[in-house]
Image 1 (spheres, rainbow, N blue to C red):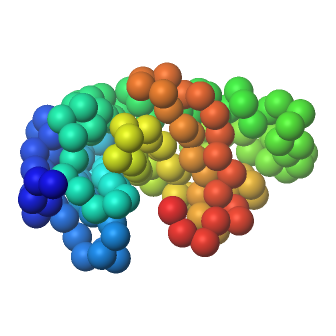
Image 2 (cartoon, rainbow, N blue to C red; image 1 turned 180 degrees about the vertical axis):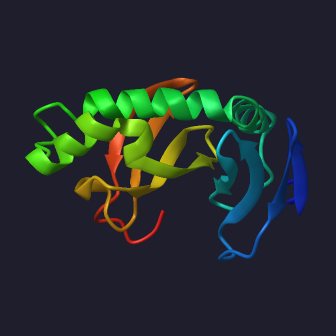
Length: 155
């Protein structure tokens, strides 16, 4: 097993390992987006150094953060209107009036050790996202599903 680094670079971002339970390796980087600074996290369980392909995923997210946020917002706007989400008339009016770009805020990316990742919006005017936000799971650069985080204890 290789030594777990305290820092590593992915594209233009410097990831710094933060305190976490012994079984996890957890790094955080700050990226500049069009609307301010955002967090990109990498979580590996069991704790290990990140593989090169996972660092490449992190670099791609850092490089295209704003574009990926736009893709996720478009996906959310379309997906949440589907019958499986059964949004209230109030929530639909929020999406109709403001659009997803105004209805969801504070995006952060979370990457796991296998290279899968999610763009999580921490804030929202839509009730489904209350307390823990709402996530969009990606496969590579393509949004694939909406993750309801309302009953999550932690991400």
